Image (spheres, rainbow, N blue to C red):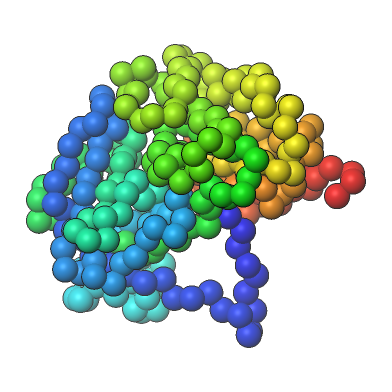
Length: 285
């Protein structure tokens, strides 16, 4: 997903804040928890154009009271930065426009993770504010082949994308898990397991070894690769430099980075991406 530059004549639109109410929650697998949000406040929410739609969940700072009705833009304008709500980004697993229900899946990390712990404790009627949706990828119906690859954090977007891949189009969907018990019944996914290895240790070799990535014209394919930033960097180099895949044929980005929470990762992500661009752009581009 590319971000357009802003300037005096081109400002970023103000994110729209929504309030969702927990309808239900369920433990999908030992390490994945699902929460469904609904309520009349979602009448203004819309998603579905892209399969990688995401929302920015807004968690109040402990001890800080925000004016009601909740207005994220007003809070940022009037509260000191250290009192702004904590933001966590999650991909939309599903949006039901008729029932006005938004489904989010959370990867659990033991007793850590602000958003994941909220999800586990959430009960019907609990409220959650969020901005969005953002997003910019969906499978190109004219592509000759498709590659979808990622870790657990990319699974919601991959699962949402698979039904949008045209019937008969060659498609490889690779999802790496740490625990085989987290496998779900999602047609078209090839599951990989890293065990005690680092994130990407099973996924990267599988992508590099897959014959269609080497045999088909890179300019006619469409790739979606997301997850932990280190393996994403390696796969970007493979697709962009070794296979010569055009940048516009790839949606590829680090959702997270090992050793960083979202705040730290977002603060350094722009510089990280700029360094990758400088290192990995082929000489012919």
